Image 1 (cartoon, rainbow, N blue to C red):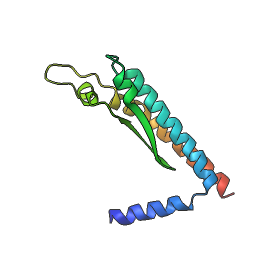
Image 2: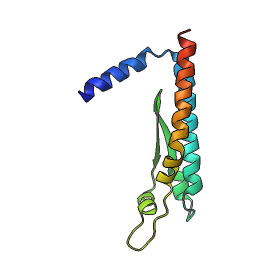
Image 3: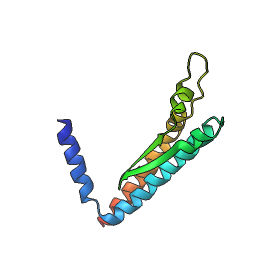
Image 4: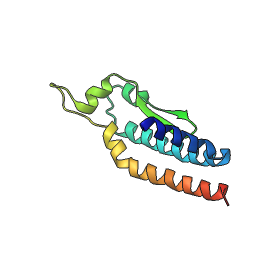
Length: 117
């Protein structure tokens, strides 16, 4: 059943006109950039490698992934037996997800209204 849901969702995305996709993509990119900026602001500044390893990747027209490549990120986020945690990833996600979701929802609504006038 989940595969059918995914197929129907992907089929629905194909119906979205290219101009509408561009508008939606802008809001997704802006949200991803905002998330990267917040994570870099909250990340510890030991040597700067952790901040530099935070990046976004536009995985398709309508999706983005924010990731951290530095191996020390897990230790900073959750801590160790010898070190307290210095969370930066999840606090950023939790504080920005509603704002990003609202922005994307507004852009989807606006794009759909414009496309199907």
